[in-house]
Image 1 (spheres, helix red, strand yellow):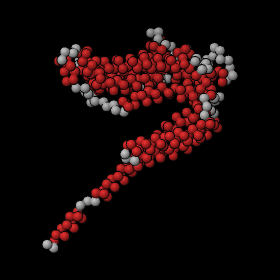
Image 2 (image 1 turned 135 degrees about the vertical axis):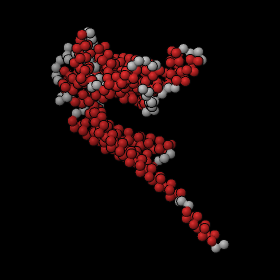
Image 3 (image 1 turned 90 degrees about the vertical axis):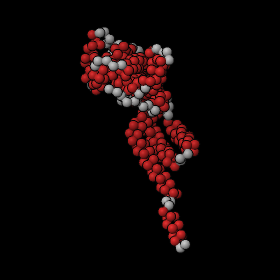
Image 4 (image 1 turned 30 degrees about the horizontal axis):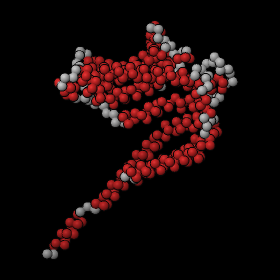
Length: 360
């Protein structure tokens, strides 16, 4: 009878203190989350701050005003980022966290409107409706000047990006499907060749491509630039699409054909929906590649009617950077807007993208 209390005491001492373990795990998780968010914020500053400077200069004007707006904006955004970090660490319930983030965002926007609002204007955006703005900034006549309308450059860039995106997605999808589903002599060598072609630096091909486009009559044409960009993008796009098709089980396609579908119908109705994320990824990257292309555009296009946004920004920067770099910054913001819109529309799908194992 005397040993029972001792046994109960020993058992109670052996049981872990669950409350202490839970508190310790929560503290460790919060510390880890705080460290990761801090690293992400600090790591993104060298990228975010230049874009923030570009936007503030575009919206506020030259030297003193733009610097003032930049520092005022940073003085508001940095504490807001720290507060956001604290919210992400402290609140574990999604609804409460979302509510706190909305309140923080509203307070930050209100502070920016009050502090930086009086310094902002849209005078630097007159290039949108004034042709040959560079010559006018330098006090020269704009009639017959060097610069086309910025909308001409915008249309050319959009045309190149959309057409080459369509070609890359179509050809890489068909070629990737064929490489994934069919065996043929030299298939492994062909796959290795795709990677080798993608590994070559594009800069080494400038002179051969220039001569080739000249010989076939495509020099100084948008078609020539499109074909060059497509040829450079296709090897990697085909290899990636093959990986997506490899991840689709053959049984899905076979069951459709057993039920009476043709090979084409099975491909269009059963296989393509399974790889639509891969097609979207290829489309986004191909569009951005065509939209931001500069090297071959600079090499192959001469007439100002064929200028793209990259050429327009380059020559504007060269001509008026010392005169009015706020205008150049505004053009830079205008240049990146389509990329931002495209990312905003597709980021939900790109972040969920997975590539299946690639068979040899």
